[in-house]
Image: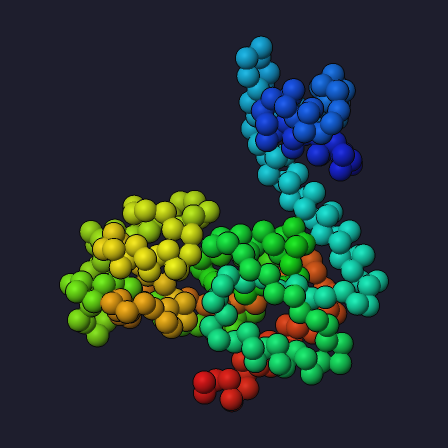
Length: 286
């Protein structure tokens, strides 16, 4: 079996990020010759070059690109394992829940109330994320559970349970051509300017970049774009804006997610409380 030490992976990833041995050495606080020797040792052990080096630049080989992707996941997994091991022995450890501001579909309060009745309930720390980094919180161990939106958030490597499914709506100024209809179809949005969401690569929007719903609403009010969001994220829009259901848009689901390797009772208890909340007749009728 070929084995790499975590420190060697850290060395490799520093060079892969910087594509410069000098800057990587400074970042790691080691001498550049020692770093170069460590990288050569890794390449010898793997039997393949990881970098193409010249006097002017450094670039990754295909093998290097593969190790960069999988090595980063491996280091994150080790870090999460260490954190969870330490937290498992801490009877006072809090449970950390990450979500985007307003991204709970009105379910957070009843879930917290239900969880408080669990015999092993802990204090819940609420962490607010940016528009697209909630999955990072879960993968690197900064959060134990998170409220995510599918299909927008990448659920790869995460276990999850669906809590709520809802329609999507288009948000337009009151005087917009689509504002008077009871519903619209995706084809009717053709030619409209949609936002580019900060931190979300590969989006279809061609309009200005926005980081949250507040910025989106402001740009829509100015007539710079329109937006499409899950219904629960637009319960309160500024005066002058109108929400119209998009009948043929795929539904959006609010999911409770956690690292698929995290089987701690701390997490399982919260998941059980959340599922109990959404299955109760009172919650379903709200």
